[in-house]
Image (tube, rainbow, N blue to C red; front, side, top):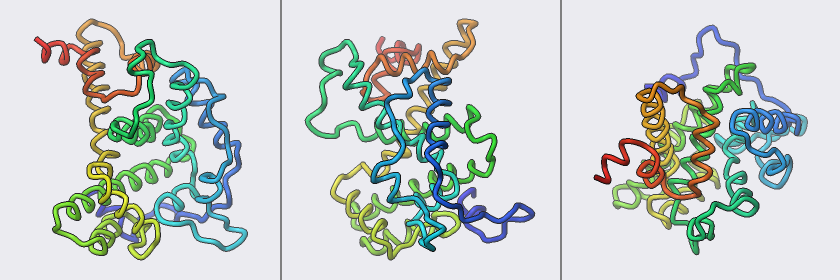
Length: 266
């Protein structure tokens, strides 16, 4: 229902979405400072700029249009995408502050934890939203929901391709049709690249959403355990535990840290 509501052009009495100029690096520093306050993560681990930062920004002064949902969202407010860059925080942690376990500290030979990595990055957009990062620009919340709807649509389309129920072309059209505000173009290079990538790596396309749901559940069960002990839920403490566990599946962390996990082991 959310996707259907946002996909329509009638936005009621809300002001129209403006096309914004290139966002200054100061917005990234603001997001990093906020993340530091909430999670205690060192700000030195990320820096503004870089190919990805520049490539996807909308340049209103040059009359260019941003590509698909990532470009549109970044143009209007880059902060949600910056929170997705938690990827780089985790990679920096692995290099500079590795966990105690030599097995978990080692870099896997290939990406076996797609749900853990993409789920974490996708969840960070919403976690920081609820923590108040976008309060000064409340319509940024729409960007978070639109990007999540896009990931759900492209992930489902990828499953249909893998089961031979859709061609790549049909998947691209499905992917775009269920992305709100027409922020996904089925004829774009980005949509074609994503659907081909997910065909080659089964499970990767849905990992953004399924991984996020696994983290949501872990947060919920950890918070419930704290409530049963008469303790308040502490978000920085939760992320400290998550960081110390290392880059491993959320189900493994659940087994190690929550009562639900302890019950499952018995």
